[in-house]
Amino acid sequence: MSRHAAAYIVGAYEHPLRNAPDTSVAQLHAEVAAGALADAGLTKEDIDGFFCGPDAPGTGPLSLADYMNLNLRHVDTTNTSGSSYLIHVAHAAQAIAAGKCNVALITLAGRPRQEGKSKGALKRQDNPNQPDFEWENPFGIQILGVYGMVAQRHMHRYGTTAEQMAWVKVAASHHAQFNPHAMLRDPVTVEDVVNSPLVADPLHRLDCCIVTDGGGALIVTRPEIAKSLKRPRVKVVGCGEAPMGQAGGYFEITDTAAQKSGAAAYAEANVKPSDIKYVSLYDSFTITAMLQIEDLGFCEKGAVGRFVEDGNLISGRGRLPFNTDGGGLCNNHPVNRGGMTKALEAVRQIRGEAHPSVQVPNCDLALANAIGGQLGVRHASSTLILERG
Amino acid sequence: MSDYLNPEPVPAPDTTIFWEAAKQGRLLLKQCRNCGKPHWYPRQLCPFCFSVDTDWIEASGKGEIYSFCYMRKAAAPYVLAYVTLAEGPTMMTNIVDADIGSLYTGQKVEVDFRKSVGEWSVPLFRPSGPGSL
Image (tube, rainbow over the protein chains, first blue to last red):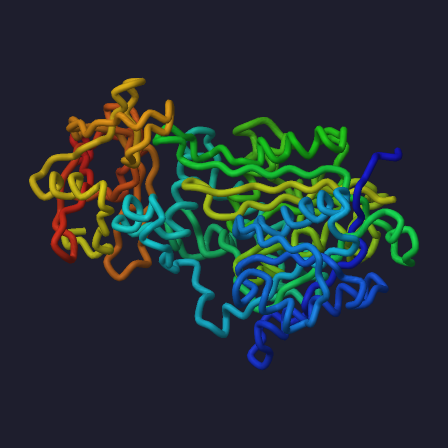
C-alpha cells in the first residue's frame, strides 16, 4: 500500500501525571510540547505552526506561543471541545499541504482536578447569548443527564442492556491494568459495573469517564521531514470532521456525527471499516464509544450491544481492539477533552509501541475518533485514519 | 419533585413573548409562514427555509416522552427529558408529577407550568394517561 499522505505524525507525548498540584497550566503545555519534540527528534526552533484549543490559557494561541517563545507563521484554534485535537491534526495536514507551515505543534493540557472541575455533574457555564442556553439551562441540563437520555433511548430503540454497556468498561479496565500511568488500573467485571451506584439513570458510576490533570501533544510534519527522522512513521491518510445539532427540533439522539466524519475519512483513505486493525474511540461514557462503533460502520446500527459483549473490544481476544491505553474510562481524560489521548494511543499502536500485552499484531492501519460537545444536544465528531509508513 | 429548583430562564430580546405567555400558562412555538414547518427552539429565522417570516403559534401542550434521565444525584432530584410535541418538534424539558419507576419512552404527557426560582414560569410536562399520579 502506498496511500498519498500530505503529512505524518512524528511526535507524540502523553503527560505522565493525572494529578498535577505543583505545575501550572502553561507549564503543562510546555512540558507536553517538549516531550513531543524529544519524541520526534526535533527542536523548538523547527516549529512554525501551533494548534491549540481553549484549554490554552489566554487569547487563542497568543499567551502560550509567547510563553514557549515559538517563532510561528501559522496558527489555528479550532474549538469543537474534546474532538478539537483530531481536527487540529487534519487542519495541520491541510496547512502543511498548502505550504503554510512545515512543523505543527498541537498541545492540550490543564488541571481540572486542582480547579475542582472533576465532577461530571457540572452544570454548563455557557454564555447566555448562546441561542440554545435559554431553552436548556432552565431544565437543569447536565452532561450526565444528556448522555443518560442517549443511553435510555438506545435501550428503548434497540434493546441495549446495562450489562452490554458494561462490557465497554470491562475492556477498558482490562487494558488499563498494563498501563503504569493509568488512573484506574484494577480490572472490573460486568457485575462490578452494573452494581456500581446509579448516578443518572440508566448510567452507573462505572459507565462514566474519569477526569484528569495533565495533557498531551502531537507533532505533525511534511513527508520529507518525517522521512529524515528516526522514529517509526505514522501517515495521516484520512480525516473527517462534522458537527451535528438538533436540526430545528427534528433529531435522533442515538445518531452521531461520526456517520459523516467517518465516511469522509474512509473515503479519503480509500479503506473500509473491516480494514481497521485498532480503534481509539472517545469514551466519555460507555454509550459514547458504542454509538461510534455503530456510526463508524464496525457493526450495524442498533447492534452494538451484542457486538461489545464477551470481550469483543479486548486486544488479543476480540474483533475490535479499542482504547488499549485504558481510554478515558480508566487511563486519562485530561481537561475533559479526550481527543488528544485517542490520537496518542493510535500512534503507539501504529508504531508498535503499545504495551506488549495489548499491542495489536501487525497494526498497520488504525482509526481514532473523538466526539466533542455533547451527544444528544450538539456535538462534533472528528475521525483520523493513520497508516504505518 | 414539587419545588422547581432549576435555573431561572434568561429571555432574549426576541423571545420575551414566549416567557410572558408561559406566565399565563400558554406554550408557544415558532412556525414559518413561508414553509409552514414549526421548529424548536424558537428563533426568528426559519431553520429549514431561512425565511425571516416566522410566527408564534400556541401549541396544544400535548406530546410524548422522547427520552428521559432521572437526575438522582441533584439536591432536588428531577427528570431531565425530551418531549416530542404533537406539532412535531422535540423540546428539552422536565417530567413532573410522575412515578419515576414507571416512566417510559413514548408515554403521553401534557404541559404544565411551574414558577421558576425567579419571576418566570417554565413549561414542564406530566403524564396525561396511565402513569400519571
